[in-house]
Length: 304
Image (cartoon, rainbow, N blue to C red; front, side):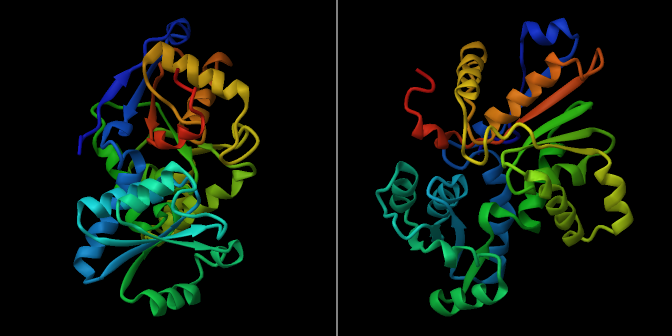
């Protein structure tokens, strides 16, 4: 594990023109397969597994899930048995590279009808899964729980200088909640990867509440959180030529790969806001690269 992950200054004429400094925290470099916020969200869940005397880890994900890929890689390294409940019973072990790699890493994949998969957060369904699979630690889809949030909070402890703004892509709200829980006065800007992602604010509040925060403290801390929902590019896992062109140009300029699901949308939003003049001269901005580059395998010519 490459920790703490490095922070890199982005040299760009746009930023110089607006007299701001933009940095990127390279969580994508933490590990070749267990990168970014996936490692962050799994770290303390693995500790819970070790301390709780469980036999296996069971978690959930779609066909191209970064969380499934990272969990399979981590459980292989730590010699822990794992089960992945995969959305879509029409799929199989070789449907794509993500599932193939997870299978090769030793994860037992169970392909589940979408109707059943929709029950993934229900307690009675968890009880049924334990009846089927034994003494399993159930980790929610995307690592969305208190332990996942706790791991993401460590990002803030690795910062060596104060920032005015931190940008982070949002899918479940777990990474945003973790960062927000550890921030003092810095403004956190979450870029939703989902169409109609306004509910993510409630998810962030729920995670803070589950961590023991008082209602009034949550309300005060949420004043530092700004959720942007208009950069979804037609919805989760969807993208346009405009977004892909931006990702290619960014790679050519900075030799940093972004993905079309999360980090590409976040960085597009950051650039757009700079162009609109939304930041004061002298602002210090940090973007969190949350990994997920394995998801670009569906676009073979993205970095050619």
